[in-house]
Image (cartoon, rainbow, N blue to C red):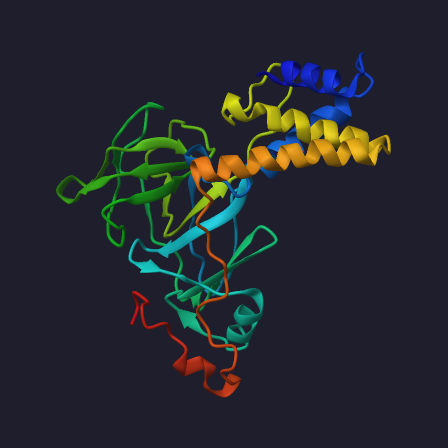
Length: 292
């Protein structure tokens, strides 16, 4: 159903007409689809983001549509281990720099420890990119780049699948990744390797006008029930609000059974909280770390 159709269904549930509540109901439909999708394993919500490491910097911005983290990797080889905020602060008492080993998420930011001891690799374009669909990128140097990964050229993120070393060329490129726009680029434009990558679940875009929710149609009733329950809560008919919300929860739980729950990091399994700060620095590397 489109948003307009969903609004009509909600008004039927609430026995109202007209447009007086349209803004409120649209807001609640959008809140509802975020709530409905937050714990459900929708493949279309899986995404990958990346950033370029900066020497001695431990805090990095995440994608604007970030919802829940899945994993973080540094230079395609080092999987970072999750810790909670308290554990990260214990680690961060020590000014340590090198290859990141741990991470946590807080208020839309990625925190890594230790902070990288060098900036991400940079080079320049060896030839102009004259097309927004070009699938190859020629560089001046491919040193310090992994065989596949992502780069930033001007404001465009480009993913590549292979390096042809002899011709200094990145092959099988996918243009305009991470919400950036494919563009042309001049020869000698700066190229920066995106050496920190993270897999995550993204939030759904808000609906407006004739938009259709990405949530499959068989679950659209849940969006109607969620928004209608909020309407009755607003008008202080709490019994009806509770009745509709319970019906919403039943559909949400069925969706979890149908599609499974998201597998996410819980940020509580790596460090021993009983370990004293004196020994924390040297003796808490996880045994299954890719860095040991």
